[in-house]
Length: 105
Image (tube, rainbow, N blue to C red):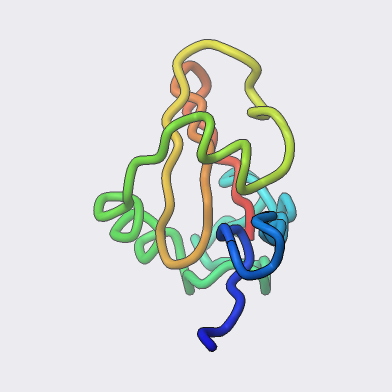
């Protein structure tokens, strides 16, 4: 029997979906990096702002629905111009008006 993965449909278990674990809000790009550009948040995989920038450029785009389902709450920016991304196991909501990223891991 295949392992049971969160967030997937399992017909042999009565057809219900095992809920996927929700991600926690870890930081924003404003408070995740110090003045030297070093990452100060242990829950983030990037050593510094340069590594984050490289990860963001190669990030996968998500739909708003997929993002909100994964984090278990509405977008932190409400409506407006927002990009939803995933890079290195971290989900991000990027509010384009203020150019702020909110990180979930």
